[in-house]
Image 1 (spheres, rainbow, N blue to C red):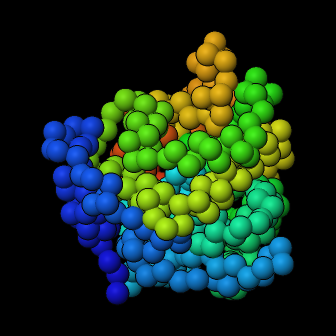
Image 2: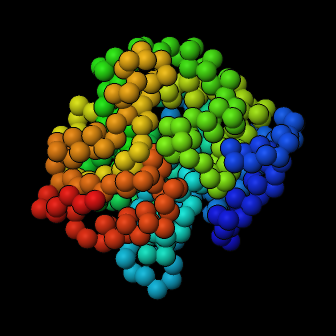
Amino acid sequence: MQISVNAVVRAVRRAVAALVLATGAAAPLQAQDLPAYGPELQGFEYPYPVQHFSFDSQRQTLQMAFMDVAPEPGHDRRQVAVLLHGKNYCSATWGPTIKALSAAGYRVIAVDQIGFCKSSKPQAYQFSFQQLASNTHALLQSLHIPRAIIIGHSTGGMLAIRYALSYPEAVQDLVLVDPIGLEDWRAKGVPAVTVDQWFQREMAASAERIRNYERTTYFAGQWREDYEPWVQMLAGMYRGPGKTQVAWDSALLYDMILNQPVYYQLSQLQVPTLLMIGDKDTTAIGKEFAPAALRPSLGRYPELARAAVAVIPHARLIEFPDAGHAPQMQQPDHFNATLIRQLSSPMDASTPMAH
């Protein structure tokens, strides 16, 4: 049975009812009163039933969590949309977009990548975008889905680019929602960061730090109460019994993101590509480690997106002037309507750039 996204939001709000929000003034809860989740996000409810794909990778058996949501009755579109989450989010955060796509007649597969959320957190794993793309392809093959619309947000966008480069025949359309990877941070001057440095940083993760980061970097200094459940979703794993493993996998994933650029292969994309960009986005991995003078030049999404569209064949651009890193969360109704409208029109090189 479908669980409404609002039910998830209400449940988490009840768990953190007395938490001081950015716009609130209630007394803070003690740490033991805040939600704590298992290393595979046990205890946090998703908006749709969760399934697991079991497969062998790098000499171990892993479990990849995913939601498989059928189109609403009355549709014969027979198209599949695959949703790939960002670094600080999970497939659950796609809830409103899943609902909108399903209502429009799409079958929707929303995946938690290995190392994230409700999927396995291996102790030893060579994380790479190629490996995650291979894992995702294996999942879709197991579901007998030969071709799909691939929609990736943030780190999921970087993964979606790698997926489309690796399996172009399996990609009907590529949609990149504020993807990271439109620049090479290391080449621009971000220094090397060791896995141990990332791990130390992740072991200090807290709801306050996550919230402050997302408010300043993702949402242009703004905050709304409906973002809070997703902060607690992530922070809850860092309060739970698997905190150390969650932090370790997160460190390995940050190392992957910083050191495996896709920027240089954007021109090799051969699938129809749509970029959906929040113009107030300033996200850049490793920015905090960069020299202060360099930071303002990183993560300038309007410039990055226009440069990307200029080199990606068969690409077009939609900009959300008042949105940051997650327009699907800031402006869900507008975003979802725009996405479905764009998917319903042919994506090709003759289509003019839109705003």
